[in-house]
Length: 260
Length: 260
Image 1: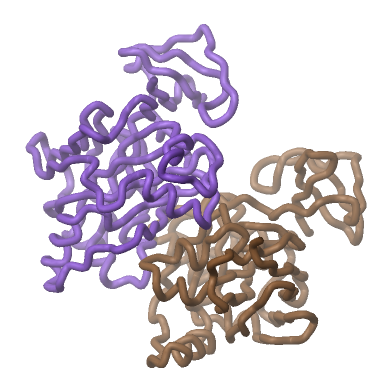
Image 2 (image 1 turned 90 degrees about the vertical axis):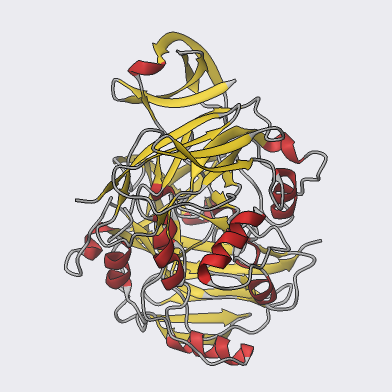
């Protein structure tokens, strides 16, 4: 089942996607909902981010090649995380599939993508175990953790480097049947493959993160957890189109433009 | 004007506080609202956090004595921030005035309070200037940025040290007339003053933070910005009652209990 969130005639709804057709729903996937008799074509609606997160978690360092590559670029020894320490991103930065990432005027040339699997929480949960961890998951979507690497190094926190408006594309939908086990993440820039990795080759997988964080934190319906990225990105410039495909899940596509 | 958020008869409302009396409101202070003819006594309602933040910003290091004290405890030289770099906290951790802070079973003895001024955003804003920065502020409330200092040092991020469930008391209300200029923040443990500082002796004041972050980020109604703390805290133990008073604004009081 694929949940999409969209605007038609200035109203935003949840709907269920079947091929090119959307069945409008009253309510939302995190609470009660009812299917309606209203159908829209996928092409006639404006896609929105599939959820406005209650809390926006992000795993940061969670694939070994990404840690090694970024250490190499800084001329330091790579240090792989030994614990599943989660971080945070901010809602102001979220944009939908096909919306534009706006590079601020004073940003440096080091604008990078990070293609990520996103876990969408559907049920309140605490003290999960490895056996029941996935029971709180509604489904999965795709995220692009856009970063300004020089700000990431110069600032004390990630507020600007990671959370500038438009720096967090997320979408296109929430797929409730997807499992990451056999999936491949492919990031293309202007149609040419730039990063390819096994989606599930994480240092700490989804159940491990869910178990760790729910030792102390309650997860709520509508929370999202971005699972980190592998590999590295070239410097992106105005006009670049970045397409992140997770096989079996979908494509998240956004054009980068310079602020005028 | 003081906005409070409360539950009566299993329903949560916004209301306006006048002395001990609450006038119930339809709607909320961030959108449209209308006063009703329903009045409650302050004593008969359950107080809730005054807002569920859209984004939960936190200034972290923003008072010089706090930076110096915490560096001293770690045996390192203090480094005062040279830029207004904002951080984030998480909604799962929020609790209201008079609710209990629960210290996890496996926490160390280093459980500390941080009494903070909280700015509540009322209007969407970007590219603010020092002259118009405060125009987006609805009012102010009080926060306690409870921290487990050993986790703060051992973990890669602040997820557990700062965002364990119940670690973020906030309240009791939003005061729209308060200004921090002449205010004093007094933190008492079991009735004895433990930390006293001038609320406005920040390294970067409220307008400076608003101008800096809105260079890159859009602020939204319902966002909150915790402004950091001065001084340091003793180790808190089960049964301790922590009361944070900001003069002219109110008291935020919470009892600390050990998880059983």
